[in-house]
Image (cartoon, rainbow, N blue to C red; front, side, top):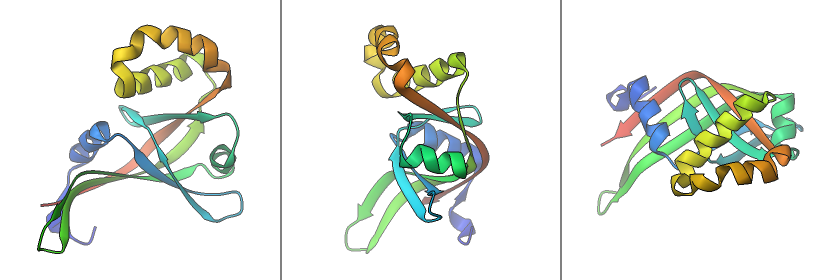
Length: 151
């Protein structure tokens, strides 16, 4: 990191990830071109989970090249009359794996739903029954976390 005065700890980055509503995942598509997509993600220790369709550009790209980089940003505050913005950010590098174990798939979906819609968990089992067979769940094993804060 170039600006060492803004560098934060790994724990700072992991806590920011937990607070962010989404992250932007960068990957290489099947044509070898950069591709980025916003995702709802949830962290479980050193793993991130997200869900998506069973097939499509994202899943095809991840199957060919599972190396990813995800950017999380929070606490964004423009500073009037200073031509700058305050923020916190975390960058994760890791490897994506499609979850095929049913128990882990349900675990990832439960964590996502608890993060994104905790008040509706009474309907989780019904939603699972309706859509588990057509929902893909991916796990990203975290290799590296870098974090910074511009104060």
